[in-house]
Image (cartoon, rainbow, N blue to C red; front, top):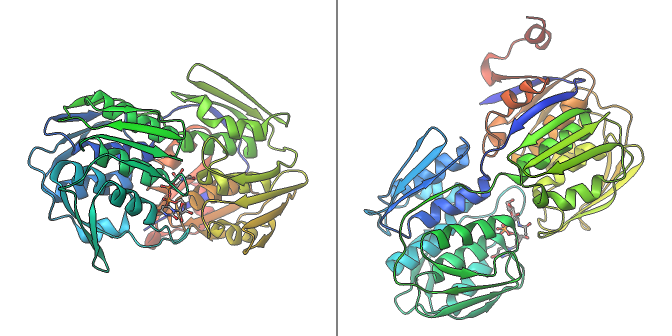
Length: 432
Ligand code: UD1
């Protein structure tokens, strides 16, 4: 168990280089079991979610390992049995293995991922769509048995553009007979990346990035060497951190157009954002005007995965910002912690809205991350706050940010990681 100790007040100056997007890499690892050939994914971050996903594919007989920033996977000896139940239940993205397992083996036993701290997160959209593809599903309380021996392409229409369901159906359909058309598909860049990867393996998928995706089943897929898109959520977190703390930050290897919704929110404010090619530059003196009325929505709108970090920025803006969480029913866990640092935020749980009344300053406090993006939000607030903060629950942050404290220290932040049981008195850590 690790804790961050942060002394706030430093601006963020310098440059960073992004690694591949966690949410893309997790889907591409699943897709890698569609072939018996070697797959290499380049520029991948060292994250616990990715390490756990690799353990899950190893548990079904694939050979998956990391070498530097590359992930190597060979699934020649993969089976459709033996999946680690414990890991599968804790890592929601294990559920997107269902599509590729059905595609390759025609039968699957898959554990239900269960709810998590940000909401219930059901899987009905995935299952309704697979049934449309003629997959027979029997529910056994904690797991499902799926029979895809008669699977064939079909038209499916999602009631909501779930990213996970879109990825699952794309991977199920890729080796099925016939054509599958997904209507109201998720348009997230990670879905486009999956399409590009599948096509690099010899698949026939088109339309990702729009609401309609067409998959023509093929006989067989082959190996590929592939560099996934960079992480737009890490990039957005850094943009918001620089906006809140002030400084001059350059982010390299970015896909700036993936962040258009965030740039739209920050434009015409005291935060200058320039981008060209794969570089984003943010300059701010750390005091913005309020951000208006913001809602998290499916891509291309503002992403739920940046809502907690945006709330931290809004907490130190001049004036009131309204925030509505439209994707998850319980994604305001960061707010109670931000309030411990002096933020003024009023939540209407039923309406999933928060009214943030910006304050001049936040103050160091002892707080706990309750999920990954909550952790990132608290780090931004702590770097902006006066005094020292203690942030518990760094293991959540490790799920999605590689060596976050090292990256931030490189930009001038005062942040250290300490082991929970060996915590030194706060002042001593910084006076060394
Ligand atoms: C969502 C985000 C994605 C983010 C990921 C992890 C959107 C559209 N997607 O992905 O960007 O990276 O979380 O934080 O913002 N739902 C159902 N039935 C289903 C599947 C989903 O009702 O079968 C509902 C969920 O209750 C939730 C929403 O759809 O309200 C998103 O659910 P989920 O599938 O968990 O997330 P993704 O869309 O995969």
